[in-house]
Structure formats: structure tokens, C-alpha cells
Length: 264
Ligand SMILES: Cc1ncc(COP(=O)(O)O)c(C=O)c1O
Image (cartoon, protein in one colour):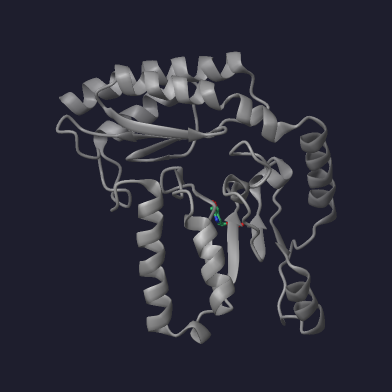
């Protein structure tokens, strides 16, 4: 990797362009990526990378799809995750979760007009049982109105410094927390063992110490996305600062037990 973000982005883009040319651009329909990588640990792309992807897609006639299932609808402090990268507009956006605040199941896809026109004229020969379910749509309509009227993405942005502060405190106070990051109300910490290695592989069976942490979190009333070695923090976007700090105090107590478990 290069010494700075820009250099890293340039290297990654050069490698991607080489791959596109190797495959043959005409064989590639689309590039699909999460605007901020979610389950993989809340990883933002280096500045310039997403703009570079957009430019490569334009250059080679490839559709750029932004997966906004986790980060759409305000999670990262912007209405859309891709807005964290200046000037980027995808061709297709997929989203779900925050669309209905997860009260009811609903997913969505948005696209540029020419793509919409294509599928209007040449519809695919399949559907889904609950596609456009009216009750879910009514729910989503109310959620989005609330989100826009109350600037929920702005509320998430406002609490980002609290996320960063609380995550930094966990890193300082717990040998089992190697590093962490947050964007809006989307945070993650990386858990390590006494040797400073990840407490387990992401796809592996849950390590005994990780299972103890899960139990300790449940006892503290904390429940969330936990894919060891990554522990996510993605609270409701309407959370107050007081509630958020209370949540981190609970996590701090649970991690004290984890510190002991990984050391023994
Ligand atoms: C980032 C991301 N993309 C896609 C999906 C899959 O979404 P769906 O179940 O609506 O197909 C998920 C589900 O958790 C997700 O988190």
C-alpha cells in the first residue's frame, strides 16, 4: 500500500483497471460495491477511490451500483453513503433496512432514467411475493417523511464525535480492543487476543471468549451485529447522546469480562 490515502486509491484503481482490461470491458455488466463496507468492519473507501471507480465505469461503459442496504437512509450521517465521496452519483442504488426503519420488511432499487426505461420496455420475467407490499410502503413513506422533516442524517452526523470519543476510550481502556472507527452512527471495533491477533477468523466458529462477550453484552441489555473479530455499533438513528453514552458504558463493562476471558 502507498503512504497516503490518495496513493492507496491510485494503486487500487490501477489494479482494477488492469483487471477490467484483462477480463475485457465488454464482459463486465456492472461493478457493485457497498459505499461504506458494513459487515466487513465499517470501512470507508480511501478518498478518490470511489470517484475513480465512477470514472472507470464511465470510461468502459460499466454500470456502477451502490449497495446502500446498510448505509443508506442516514446511517453514516449523510442521507446516502455515497455522498461521503464528493461528486459521486451511482447508476443504480439498492437499499433496505433504514428505508422502513426496519419496522416492516422492504427493499428498494433506484436507477437512472435510461436503465428504468430499458426495464419498462423489456421487463424481466420474474417477481417477488411481497414486492411493493402496500403496508410496508405506507410504513416506509412515513419513515422517510419523519427522516427528512427531522433531519435524521444530520442527527447521526452530530453524534459522530460521541461515537469516536467512546470508541477511542474503549481502545485506551481495553487490551482486547485493537482499533475502531465510526462514521455517523456506524461504528466498529476490532477484537484481539492476548497476543494482539484477531480473536478469531471472521468465518470461523465463535471463539469461547467471543461467546462470553456476547453473553456479557446480553446481560447488559446490549444486542447488535457481532461478527467476531468485529463488533459493530449501529444504534437507532433517533438515539439521544445520553442513551448512546449509556450504551458504551454497558459495552465497557462487558469488555472488562472479555479482557479477562482472552487473557486466560
Ligand atoms: C450491505 C448489504 N447488502 C445486501 C444485503 C442483502 O439485502 P437483501 O436481504 O435485501 O437482499 C444485506 C443484508 O444484510 C446487506 O447488509
